[in-house]
Image 1 (cartoon, rainbow, N blue to C red):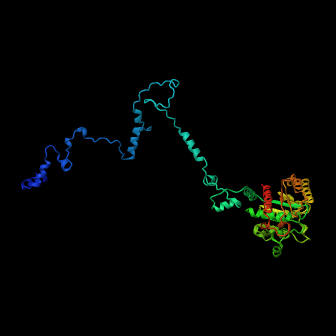
Image 2: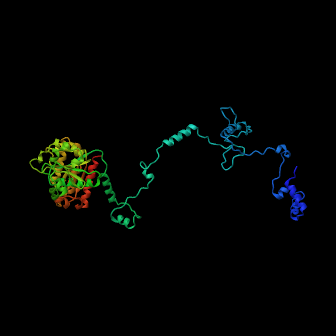
Image 3: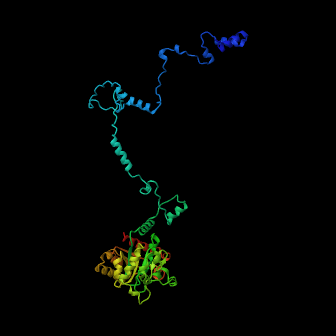
Length: 453
């Protein structure tokens, strides 16, 4: 058998007389020292020389299962498996020795500052049952979650209203919005009027403007209130001239010159073709427009102006109700002409025009009494009386007495101050009116919409 290579190399080095190799060999053969510790080589272990008790490696604390089946089998051994009848390991642990009986609660007062005894078990609250947890989870899932539509205030901080005009508005502009004192009391009142006027309506409504005497602001009130409704409402209103005495509603809204330049389309032309109109586009051919206020002109021919009947007006009203949510009807003077019964039948509320004169106040009161005695008691009770200071009466007239005389027999009384833009009997535009007059028209428009809802 050939000698190992290492022995041959060592013998050759020893006989060759190389001093370096001999020195290294002597160092490895130091008495009592393991050669592997010096050289760093792994010693060769003979399995036959290992004791029997050291043959098996020590068990690791935890071993990863090689497969899912082995992991499941290990879990069954630990916790038990009802299908196989395996007893869980926990149940095989011997029970703890019984604890000595505790004294009654009356003999052992509670000492929250003293820790519990080492042998005593702490009180653990009972866990909720599975059915209780399921009911709680179902209630949480069924509860409506807040969203941007139903609860916008949860996501967006409410912004303070911006002041307009006055000292508050000037401070707001000077500071770039950093100093916001909010709107004044007057501005809050104006915002409330705008809100009442612009309310959304479900359906179509009609307001009749009438009086027993001419020249007291009936048509100017119709135009001013109509323009105000058109300014604040999202849907345009419609004004109908049902005055049998050659009414001038369109002339007051457009101006005499503009109206004469347009094609003469009147309520009589609309009646001739009312059955063929099936769209707003077709209806617009018979209407005039003062901004967003749409108007139907009255008949100007004296021979046919008084021929409008109640049935014909109801046909016009039915057509208008399909396209406009708010309609104003200028009834003219009196309450006994042919179309008046149809107007009152389709009216939702009334505006009674009056003046600051003894005769005007008496006629307004007589109108309300006539309505109440002829089957229109609800209209009389909910009517809005508008007193226009058209002629700027003298100081001898007691305006407060006239207002008190009419206020108790109607829903609301509103006074329109003297304004040359109304008294001239010509074009009525909101820009040319005084602020007090415009505010009075806003109050009338808000009162009208209040009667609809």
